[in-house]
Image 1 (cartoon, helix red, strand yellow):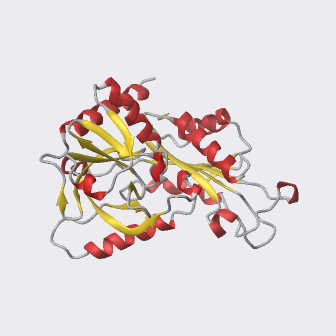
Image 2: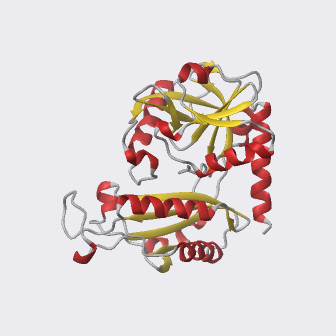
Length: 312
């Protein structure tokens, strides 16, 4: 997961190039039609990832997920995965970026008519593909030292909607959950909330708005099962792969808030945040120290992977 990078926009942003339907153009020249279904209906999918020292991290996994989601939604992807990877790498070089936020967006494209019915390719509908790269602005270091607070969202995730497992361009639920959390915590003397936590309609813990969630119980790492109908995060997958090498037992399970609130440690994962500890859920403090012992080990192991990848 991952859709945001904090910090003020870089002053160079106006002169950055983007990959727009096969061409490298200046960002301000990449004009999307007012009839584009991504703009009209959120009819599209996207991926966000990071580059370290000019090397896009886990790009094969991200592009494969993009391709799988496009196929599931019936959106033609007219580029091979190697072509897309080359486009990302060329764009990083063109924009002279080393540590960057990368976003690949695919919409169903311009429709010859208004209405929900998607156009047939034969009738002229062509998908829109945009790749953007921007300087990466890291989250405040104190978030990793002190942890972040989560609010429990009043919005509930469906347990049956298949779209939950795809990173679609319609992120309105996440946006509204963030706004709801900010309103509830506005003016409180304690620190504000950094994200909202979703449960599904059966009361099972799902994920945060842009991150997967993990907990630690007696040295064991547990994350919500995909059966909770969550996004199969790339960083989530990598953390599950890291655990055995660190001598840590990891599992995917269904569980509710009562169990999460009793956890020794809780942390979030996504491609931009990497691994971020959670200090509080609502007013309930998590664990005795933040980050906890297991969280810290995983943070260090993940950092080792990104450092190694940046030197290749």
